[in-house]
Length: 437
Image (cartoon, rainbow, N blue to C red):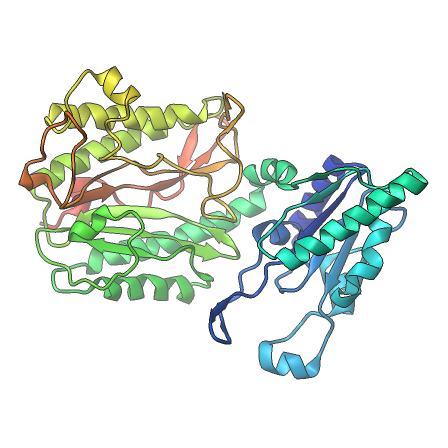
């Protein structure tokens, strides 16, 4: 049977949607080229509620229904098709294993869905990229509107279920945290291996192979996102994924790689010399980024607003760049006018969980969300001065010795009852630990 966490999540959803009906669709298979498909990855919201890991499935939640509150529609067993594309759970086993009140073949969706909508006062549905399926749901909704005119029941509005789901997913259970910790543990070992094995002359993809082999060797699903192994000026490209350059001495190596374990993710970045030592300019900028990260992490604690940890890292980096003469002006005006952004153009972090950039949002209206226990967030400030860096109008030209340096330091942080825990602390980030004698 599935872990009891899934039943608890469904109970939370059912209590929040009350007299409404919510419909969630499994992820479709995606085509890589011609008739070759990508490896299947279940939709995160669907998986969060069901644990079901097949395509062409629909989950319906109807707390107002007299018999069935949790309904699954799945592909039936089919020996011929399973020979080609893998085993299916099937209708009978899905009911037993996944805890649904009733399970139907997916082909019967249009036949049975109306009875779970007829007494609902609202329909929760997220409009995805499959226009044909969106149209099917809209037809069901329109039919319900017509029924409401005749019988006085049926959904009168549609709302995205993420308005409910995001709040549930933002706060991680002990079970979820155990999976995140495992994903972190595997990724930390992989990063430490890369730190040990890096050397001039290696190709970026060689370290990528070492990292991702270790992910799979320890039971991970693979990379949580395309691994970034960026040497030299490639470190200034935020989402560099070619990983095909030969690394040279006196350059930096930025590796941003996380592991996915049972659908939960880690996200770690370290930057260090390809060879033995930081150059003077690399050392100065690295110390500045690390200082900003440590200051930001101190702000991650219950009750603090989201923007405070980002604003903290922005101020530290801006002050440091001004001391180096790379930015000029009055500090508050420089920050207000975002003159630091050519050097530091992204946020300081994001929620982490089933999705690498997990749901939960940063603010509601004009109010910033505040940190609370059992939330997981990344802290990842950076400085990037590409070889073709162009300063803003009124800002100084950048001397050549600073060009081609990109630095990011990223950790995964758990908000605790009285502060935070750096989950990724096993990966070193001090200059002393990263340099070789």
